[in-house]
Amino acid sequence: MDSRLSGFYRLSVSERQKALKSQTGHSFPSLFEFGSLGEKAADSMIENAVGSVSVPVGIATHFVVNGKSLLVPLAVEETSVVAACSRGAKLSNGFTTESDPSVMIGQVLLVNIVDSRQALLNLNAARSELIELARTNSIIEKLGGGTKDIQFHPLHAREGVWIEVHVLVDCIDAMGANTVNTVCERIAPRLEELSGGVARMRIISNLCIHRKVRARTTWSKESLGGAGVVDAFLQGIEFAQLSPFRATTHNKGIMNGMDALALATGNDWRAVEASAHAFAAFGHSYAPLTRFHKTPEGNLAGEIELALAVGTVGGATKINGAAQDSLKLLGISSARELAEVMACVGLAQNFSAVHALVSEGIQKGHMRLHAKNIAFNAGASAEEMDEVARLMISKDSINESFARQTIAELRALDKGIKNKPVGK
Image (cartoon, rainbow, N blue to C red; front, side, top):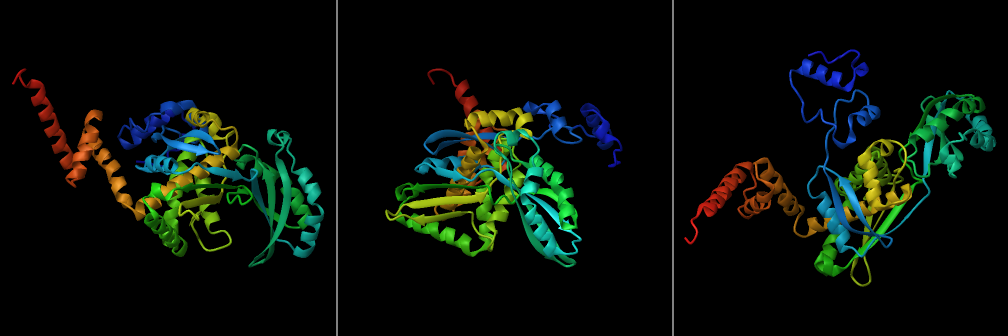
């Protein structure tokens, strides 16, 4: 096989598929499907497209955010995420949220500066000029967004002082990468003139500390199983505060729900991940993104704060019909509202995971859903799946061999009942 495939990008989608079959000797019927995305959309979104990979979309229920009932689409391959998210929302007393304006940071790195002190003086004196130069007459600016400020930070590198330029751009309802990168490119030549240096990097930062979102809610001690469970829950939270090993998994659980909503709505879930984990360590050692405490009544109160950039316009949201449908299902009107819902999802997901860990154990719920997967792989029909899973769990034999045996026994029993003479 020759992996170089010279000129592969010039081929049509069908020609690429044929080339892969020729090179590997295999057909890929599942991979070469495009589903609801469609061939044209997929080919416009990425390079060398040959197909798509399906991810189930489930609906998280029971969400009430700022008094508004919502159905939340989650695109995820992991069992228990949708159920846990729904449970966390169901047991809560509803979520309240707030968010900052959609300001992103663009970075320009200035190097090879002879006199950094004079360069900083020149740059700060020209801030208003640079902000004006950054205007691109874009739709975002017409809606009230655009560059709001420019900041300059000295960096002490091995070869001398560099200057890190932060361009603060309000992206309104866009995630903002293309807009911010364009602004950075636009002002880079003038930054070089003012500093006497060379502009090396001109790109958005995914650590969006000016674009934070917060969500909070409470859970009654009765819904958790009593005061003892509240205390155990808070011990689990303190564990995450004390151990970065636990904090990492704690935050991963938060992202189970948030990434799933980002994927469903056509957002860059990798940027969401990067910002969340960087924010978890911003200005201090790595820590949980959520905080919990006991109220005077003995109930559990929880909140989440993180830097989060998502969009409802542009990018994949404009091309991907499924993403547009997800946004329509949510019934939201802005990127800030989407970020607020996403934070609620992360908080609900985290609550359910920690509650399971300190009560019945997280594996019990996982195995209920895992048993259904095993039953499906063993050939169970939709009507048989729940019963096969139940019997596997009751016998503590969650494996494909036992599932096949159980399916055969159920079908034999069903056949015997159907063939039994009337009146016997």
